[in-house]
Each structure stands twice: as structure tokens, then as C-alpha cells.
Length: 124
Image (cartoon, rainbow, N blue to C red; front, side):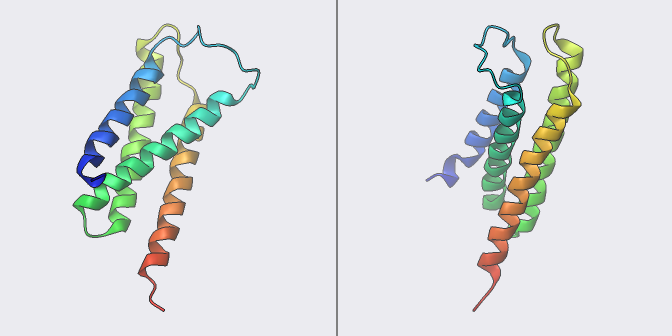
């Protein structure tokens, strides 16, 4: 049943990340951790990569292609959002460290998926 809604989940989550990235978040309470923003970026893009992989793996025979597709979708989306933050918003700015945090989450998820895919392929 989850596979039936996997595209809707991936698009909905990606849209939510896009909206959250472009709205004014200055009114959020300060939690006192200077790098909490980077932790959010890391986790958000890790989940996004997993959701896109979940959808793509229902459409393709090879999980390796699904992993690569999920990585490309997530990374390109992250870079576009950072560019839009710099170009369209007055209260947000593009940040290279955000891109690094995004890509770290994406790559860690890709390694995890690749490892899990390898474990399923091996026959004992």
C-alpha cells in the first residue's frame, strides 16, 4: 500500500521542504544550538532521498538506478532551493554550508541504500 502512494509522499515531502526553505522562519524560537539548521538540512535531505528512492524503485528494475536517480533529484532540488533563497527572498540567503549539509544527508542515505541493496543481492 505504501508503494501505491510513494510518488505522492515524495512530491508532498519535497514540496514541504521547498516551502519551508523559502518562507520567513525568523519567528521560530531559538534552541541555543548554533548548528541545528545544518542538522535539519542533513536529516531533511536524507529523508527526501529515501522517499525518492522508494518511489523510483517501484518504477525501475535496478535499485542502483533508483539510488542514483534519488541522489540526482535531491541534490539538484537542494541547489535550486539555495539559489532561489538568494534570488527571491529578502529574509533568507544562499549558504554553501546548507548545500554541504544537504549533500551529506543525501550521500549518507545513498551509501546506506547501496549497502542494503548489496546485502539483498548476495546469495549464500
